[in-house]
Amino acid sequence: MEITTIIGLIFGFACVVISIFWAGADIMSYVDLPSVFCVIGGVVGSTITSFPLESLKSLLKVMSIAFKANKIDLTKDIDKLIEIANIRRREGILALEETANNTDDPFFKKGLLLIADGVDAELVRDIMEMEMDFVKERHASAQAIILQMSSYSPAFGMIGTLIGLINMLGALSDMDALGPNMAVALVTTFYGVVLANMIFTPFAKKLAAMGSDEILRSELILEGLLAMENGENPQIIRQRLESFLPHTQLAKR
Image (cartoon, rainbow, N blue to C red):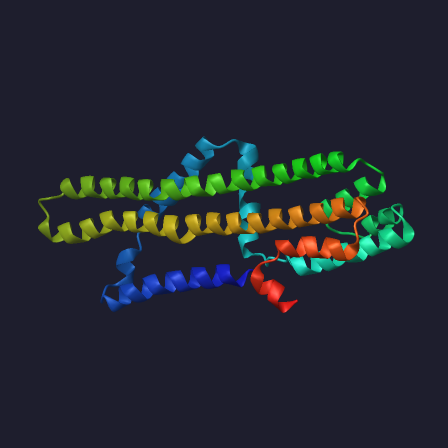
């Protein structure tokens, strides 16, 4: 599980709740079901209108990725590539097929099988880069939906506030109800801003960061496979691939 997502959500909401109590307010004054219905219902409805069904089907699955641990370890990938490069030098290119069948990662496996089949290096690069482009497109589509939801949230918060203000102005003769009605009107905007800035935008940013890490790993694997196909020395391949590592990881090696 990606612990930073959990910590961030808990810490953010805890700070908001503590601030409410610190200000001496009644927490129940921030609870209004019609306001929740207006904001969440409006955001969901507008999002469904804005995007095709196929894009929306994978939204919950994509958002759940933000809660999953990032298993990317570039140093392990480099070690694995060097191990495979040594196998290729000792046993020949056909030995890569057996190695590919024992590999769980689809991208890694596909590249190994292409090399084992004797596909030209440039064609291997084109095929694998096309695969990476499809991954980027899927990530960008999901992030676009979440960012759009982030932009809808404050707007529907404002709509809920306008509804509350209209109702309040319709009952101006009851001055005792003026304050509570104003509070209810404003709480809808509160919901919209919280949803946008504590859930939707952070989720989109987290998915973008995780997607960038995945693409970087794919680029590292591709460079290692192509160098392997060209018959480069494993130590030269290692030095080339270590340029993908951040300085903090290089210092530990």
